[in-house]
Length: 120
Image 1 (cartoon, rainbow, N blue to C red):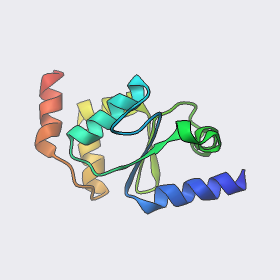
Image 2 (cartoon, rainbow, N blue to C red):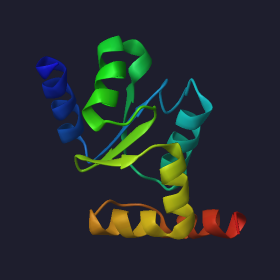
Image 3 (cartoon, helix red, strand yellow):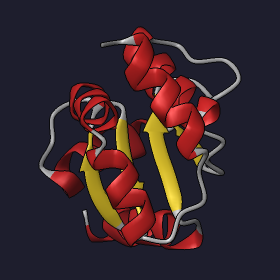
Image 4 (cartoon, rainbow, N blue to C red):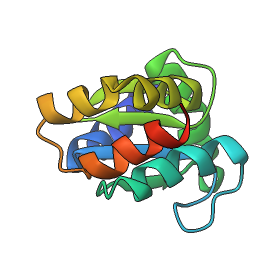
């Protein structure tokens, strides 16, 4: 377990925004992963995708690491933020904007407003 923890620590420390997902940002393999990757892409957030389907050790290891049972999982500057439902709620409540600003992550605030307007 320690080896996988070190591997995950390395992955999440390399990039400011990391999404552990099923598939890739350009070819998601599940609806929840597709939704979160779609939001990040739409908001023009630069992120690293990690396809958990390519590595069973990562797939189970990330669940143990975060103590969160599902994929996708979003990390920003090494901090676990949540999965699909949490990210969706945060975007719709503007909490995601605040988090991104606090963490100094570039994103399109106007597109975030468009998402909220379209879902109100």
